[in-house]
Length: 52
Image: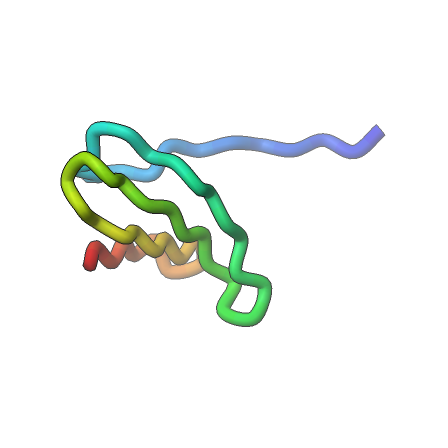
């Protein structure tokens, strides 16, 4: 059986994260927060979060 681990993404300012998408090309996780109108991109390798 394959085991996975989870970690929290720090310092997100959103209220409702939805539409989670794994971007295989860039190896990042993207999601939107419609309440605060932010598109988030998390890079797990560098642990950087970009909010647009």
